[in-house]
Amino acid sequence: MITSLSQLVEHIKQQQPKRIVIAGAEQEELLLANQAYSQGLATFVLIGDRHKIQEMMQKNNLSEDLFEVIDEPNQDMAARLAVKMVIEGDADIPMKGTMHTSTFLKAVLDKNHGLATNMRISQITIFDGYNKTLQFLTDCAINIKPDLKEKKSIIENAVFVAKKMGYSMPLVALIGSIETVSESMPDTLDSAVLTQMNRRKQIKDCIVDGPLSLDNAICQDAAKQKGIESPVAGKADILVAAELQVANTFSKALHYYAKLDTASVIVGTASPIIMTSRTDELKNKIFSIAASCYLHH
Image (cartoon, rainbow, N blue to C red; front, side, top):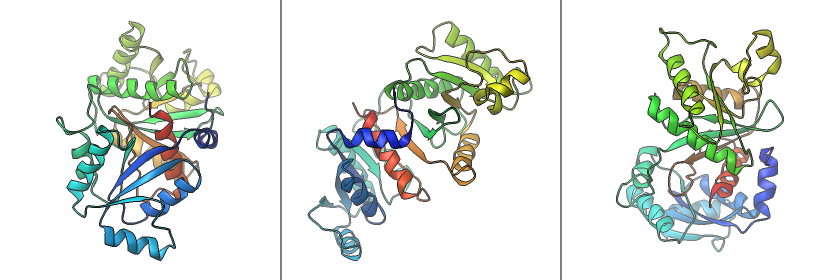
């Protein structure tokens, strides 16, 4: 079982490097690619304006022999080419470089020429958790205000990731501001239904409970003080937020307040997708690359 992000990186270093294709690799993506390549995590194909890529390489004293460079300055075409390379087996994982997220995802999710599957795409933030193991927070980047069906898919994607990391029966907490079901708070109704769906085996390979407030989900003492009896309370592996705004804010708090390292993965597609934030530190982008490589079948 993988219990920390540093352990995850060390594990990937022992594996055959995956081939990552970066669409729009014209700025700091070059430094990231060089760092990941130097650590033995992956090899890279860089798609973008060749002139800008070469300028960036010269500015940072990077050898042009390290990477394959494909000249395609048009962002839309660069994204489509990156996806095409993954589909045809010329690369393993696509990564968004300097381009609009909508442009990149349009190519990834194209029904005829993309990486879409029958699963819903969602994002998971992985971090070194409160209980000395990895924890998984979702969805911080893709699904803005998911409905019941979409929440089910988000849970299933997070369970897939956790199980790949060695968590055989992930404990899933549906996070809310209270622990009881309230008709005036629709998200608590969704949590109650999803909990029952899990009990009826409509959501499998995990134990789901909610609504649970954050303290009760991760701290056993807090759960005991509130008299909450649950196999998930105080021990949650997966934290599912009711909407993106909550998860995204929580994710940023992990970094800026708690000073925790994080990795971001996007799943639900035929291949994991790497799509980091421009404000992420280099080491967290490295963790995201390692996590995506680990999840690649």
